Image 1 (tube, rainbow, N blue to C red):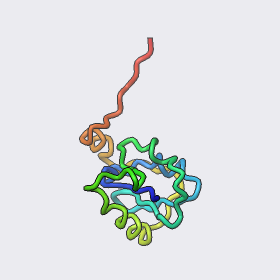
Image 2: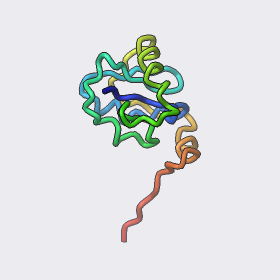
Image 3: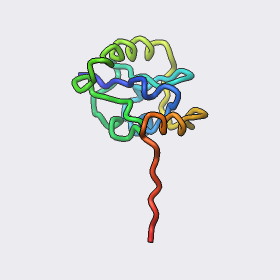
Image 4: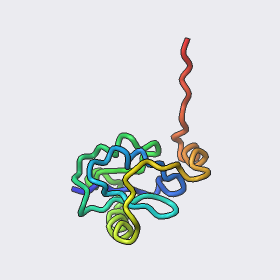
Length: 109
């Protein structure tokens, strides 16, 4: 099994996933993050913390996103490791809303 970052990450690059990763398997370019399948231990800690649902287990990856398995392996080998949470990209909140994952505010009484 592998854990895969898909195109929902593009333009956002929220890095909550990086902050929960125990093995530093994330790599980043100027648009998004990728997972190195040779380093990832398949703990799946990153999946539930992604605010744009960009991360999947390869077993649960929609058919139209299967190409991201190879893309992660190729791109991770090219870009540096990131192992700490970073600021999202400019426009990330707008991209999140566009994808339908707008953050909802909770009011307290």
